Length: 161
Image (cartoon, rainbow, N blue to C red):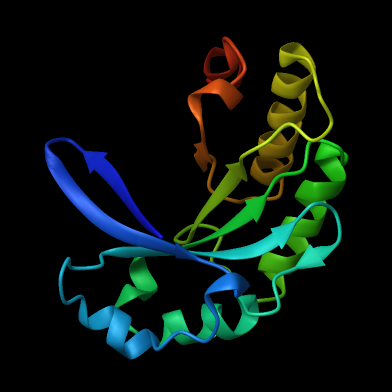
């Protein structure tokens, strides 16, 4: 899956991968043919107990390429599971896989509202998750991938300091 991040007026190309993509030839990906791949995110966890079966392998392999300075891990967020339990599960998985809390990026993949949470509850849960990660020393600004419809109203204002 190709994602685009706009930074200033520069477009950077990157990918996110999960166990659904199978085995990945990371040296080939890092060559950055067309378009040049500049960053990568790999799925680490989902909910409060699932660990992607390819996370450790992908994380280690990415670390052996030039993409090591532009890598991140993501958590697939489940609204029908507790926010703090999910954050704990995600942080423990990252810590056990040599995740650099200062250098490496982390993200939340929020695609659906399985728990049918109201906007206010959803905003509170996402704030709990991000606060937990910050309190554990992970860099404080996560990437959030989602659809506009999933973003609780005024949520960004609630997490800014």
